[in-house]
Image (spheres, rainbow over the protein chains, first blue to last red):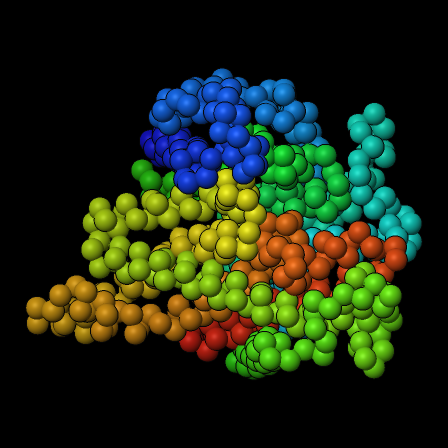
Length: 315
Length: 273
């Protein structure tokens, strides 16, 4: 297990390194001059040259990349060209909102997805199963941003129960929570549709195995067999999907924050594109990609930890 | 088996309808979708405008029809480009094996670190937002998906007796790949492409909604939704139609893909009963 952990950790850092390289090269080396992008094509050559010097763009690429990576490792993402403050400050201000949204979405997804999946599997072939599967089939096809608009139309415009968007700040926790309910719901419904399907098919697969029949035959109740025998085995593949969904939810916040005008990291990305604030975009893309990579890494580790059979194979 | 057939038929019908409507929009729409008429804005459904008009007096049906060809083109181009490159990588990995295979698969793992939206954001920041960049971003995420599926399927075929026989006769790796491997994994690739089509339509809609895809005046379901969102108190119905189109299109390709997979993979048919 230790050897495996070590190998995977090395792999993680390798991946993060290459990811940072890809992002940096896309933003800096491909044709397209950041100075022109910021100032527009009408700017004079002098103005562009000054800005290039100010941004440090007149130095060789490898040197800029080295400086940037060294900075990032120390938590310094450079200075935002538009806001004129360190990018790390912009990020730290916005992390609580995006993190809360992602956590709310993820928790609801896990609870809803697994419950519906198990319900469908234990009622296989009956109307309940059929209804859940139909809902999830449609749920997968619904774009999260359209679902958000529908939720706003119904709960904010029509019923006036919840705010249609915006964020009041953390000073009033209850209002803050209220303004995150619709965004988190939009994130959740689509993801739990996926999770319910995976849970159902995984549970059905396990239910057919011999040890389940044996457990039933020795007189255990349906509920106990489900809890003690089916669930632990059925949830192993589900963990993989949940890991992928962490990535889905985190990148989903980018879209959802823009639908609901929430001042989080996802909204900052778009403001930065509009403002031609390349350093900020660069930092955020690396940050989001790193979250995706690390989520996958954790899933791989957890996967081995919860399945003792895999540990034996690794020895 | 019955459920697979139902999926297949609903999916095929939806995809067929969508294709017909999209092709029809090339030669005919009820009105010119670029025709602005401020005096006619926010009209209720009528005989001349079956779904009414939008905030600029444009006919909604005509806009939706024209947007469908946009969606299909993006999906076709993106899945086509990504599918070709990915399949090529998968075939090479499988045919060469050894470190080539290991290296190519590691590159694919990297691809999974970039969801389409991140890649599109990067391209938009570097080159400005455009439909071409959206296509590139969606194509990019298809490469590792197709590479993995192709390699997995091709490796199974390489282990079969008839391939070993072909190798024993001294045929080259490329000859075998072209003549035996590709035709045998084609059904799997077609199924995958159908499913990725659904994903691509969804991705295009999201990117266009965010302003990273189709640019005005090109009609796109995603962009129609972002415009409608600002008019929710005046004309909520404008926020309904484009979303329904996206759902039906995605559902169509998704069901068609599921149905085709059940047809081509007997193991799945049994487990679904």
